[in-house]
Amino acid sequence: MNTCYTADLVYTSGEFRPGVHIEVDDGQIIGVTSTPPEQASVRRFPGHAIFPGAVNTHCHSYLSLLRGELDELPLAPWLAQVYREVAVFDTDAAYVGALLAFGEMLRAGTTTVADFFYLNGAGNANVRAALRAAHDLGIRVVMGRTLLDAEWGGPATRESVPAAEARFRELAAEFQDDSLITISPAPHSLYGASRAMVELAAALAEEFGTLWYMHVSDSASSADRVRRELGGSEIGLLDGWGLLTSRLVSVHGIWLTEAELDLVGQRDGRLSYNCASNMFFAERIIRLADITSRGIRTGLGTDGAASNNALSILRDVQIAGLAQRVQAGSVTETPTDSLIRLATCDGGEVLGQSVGAIQPGYGADFIVLDLTDPSLLPTVNLKSHVVHSLSPTAIAHVFCGGRQVVRDGRLTGIDQHDIAHRVNALRAKHAGLRRDQER
Ligand SMILES: [Zn+2]
Image: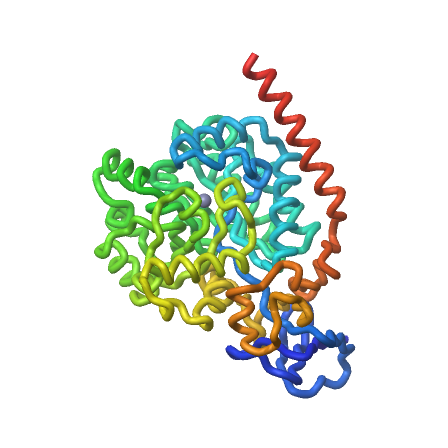
């Protein structure tokens, strides 16, 4: 029997509306109606509102284990320190880091995440462990399986092109029937992956019918480095190689020039905007209107918790809204409706997933908001509250693919105390391992 969900208000077709019923079958929304369908069990949430789950277009789950340790480093020394730290990460670290990251996201109302997972130097065991965490908690994941062959990656992350190809195929085959997991190639960047590796990623995406993900113009120094080492701009090089297509999701893109943005727009490109992380690194606030006006599909990403440091899209959309106002010097720069879309359905579109909206054909991914929470009062202008004042305490329940993954603010898949204990025990073990290495 199908299940039907209803609350005082349901956000659908751009408005919070009363008397709306969401009919769900097999993890999918199959109907949004004003009367409950016959032959469905009805779950009512009086005093609550239902809103689509938020979509995070970029994260590195295992970096949650390094939260707060690298707060005042610019990107280049930050990267060097990250690679020193993760050299001791094993499958347990990949699993526990992902439990922490995905659990935090679910509790903060994010139901879909594009993870970007580097720790593949020894094969697929680590990425499999992260996906097991996703499965245990019930979050929807686009797993950007990173391909990295630059010398600087070290044994934890570095692979040859043939090894990366064989392992990608193995992982994609394993998860091909999983309704919540999509495996996508993710060459690290043009300074982390060779041309052959990037061409492999684009070819695999084409063959498997997925998108592919890459850091592009993520900092002023990396854009310069690519120009110096490869003799061109990142977007110019990709276009010259015939790889700049609608399958590429460029991550960051904060230093793209006007001409590069034009080209991304002409090629029907996609972009992951990581506002809080870009500001954390004191890099730049790009003007969103310069991107979206060119037809570039754009969603919001948190990036990892070692450079943000919270993994909440509904917090970052507040930050993004403020940043855009300051950047443009205008209070009308990013209207409420556009911020809601940025945090939800636009992110879904960037990832090529039918998520982030309460409408038939979409995943049954939604959050149930407590209308007595102070951050949502008074109960008028609720759309504004969601993007300008929402507190995580307002998020009572979360559903992903029809499964309840948060109940009364707590994860249903794994006990929060268990995650906390494992995270702290692991970091103590890592500190010991690093001391031994340095001796
Ligand atoms: Zn990243």
